[in-house]
Image (cartoon, rainbow, N blue to C red; front, side, top):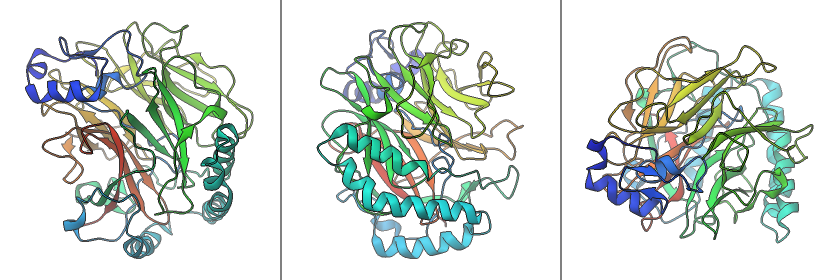
Amino acid sequence: MGPRSSVVVALSALAAACVLGNPNFDAADGSASESSTRGGDPETHGGATTSASAGESSGATGTGTTGASDPSTSDSTTTDGLTSTAATSDASTTSDATSDATSDATSDATSDATSNATSDSTTDATSDATSDATSDATDSTSDATTTDTTTDGEGPPGACGIPVDQWSFVDVAPIAAINTTQFEGDPLLLADGLTLYYTAETPNLADDIYVTTRAKFGAPFGPGIKADALGLNTASSDSRIALSSDLLRVYFATNRPGGQGMVDVWTASRAKALLPFAPPTPIMAVNNGNNDFDPTISLDELRLYFAPKLGVSHDIAIATRPSLGDPFGSPTALAVINEDSSSEAHPSLTGDERVLLFTSTRSGVADLYVAWRESVDENFGAPVPLPAPINTPNFSEGEASLYEGDEGCELYFMSTRNNDSWDLFRARLVGP
């Protein structure tokens, strides 16, 4: 992660997490080296991990909830698939909870996307033809874009009808088909609930954007492949994508030449969801000479949340613009969320932007935290750590992305609990 205060760096637990999680982490000052190739993630792979933005795709940023399951089984990390019986039961309760908030058009779009993705996307995405598979995975999500179904200030802050202070998580499991001995992080599940983009470390220690798909909600994901059809991967480090709700614009982190230096936030657009993105450009107003990590974009694309180094450590900041045609202004750190003695990064928000998930090292290791507010016009309240079994006492967690769908709700995140390597996990969000 970025530079930390001497208090945090002195913690042996954090130093151990840094060594295990990021070969580019500079244990001397708690920062990722300037030559770090882990675009978007070096600041938190060392003790704080990266969070995938949930606000990129209108369905991807939402959070959903499923029926309660026995919490005593939630620590299992031996299987990839979620419990099918519980998922079916939970999906029915979620459907009741969200049916009023979801339009007929959204239901039709999601149904079509699920049908198309089940027959084509998963099979194609796991084939030997990498470029064809990635293109098909992108195609399957073009019909899955939805509009925000949550109105600002409607009900208590939360997801899938569950207030955030009543959240619990069950059925924690690694995504076995994509995890390796290398780094995997930055999860982003699209609105179809079937297509998962993520970042993985390549043999030359750079990062690339990968994609995997599954046949249906609750089914295991297939093997991951490079998402080269997006046109974003280069010899440099490319990571942490955030997509607009129509999939036509992307925001991501890269250390390719042409930016302000080190890792910067870049953007690109395309005319159709099936096409590669045009050559990207850096968002100069938000970047500086330090690492600028972890972009996530609001549904209207007027607010960019990310993790620059504005002071002695990385903080979660926001940059705004009045319209899509205007440039972003200079970033400002979010009030209340950041601490001087730690690094904060990997912001991920629900669609209404009233719930924020992020990674912080304030406990001495990387943990996932949540904060909420009644309106986007207000400051977030004091953050609290996510409950067990998401955070663990002996490992590091981060890079959370919360998905809300008609079938159920899932949290995707990164953890070192599986053989001490950074791997991707998922869990079901349930109520009390």
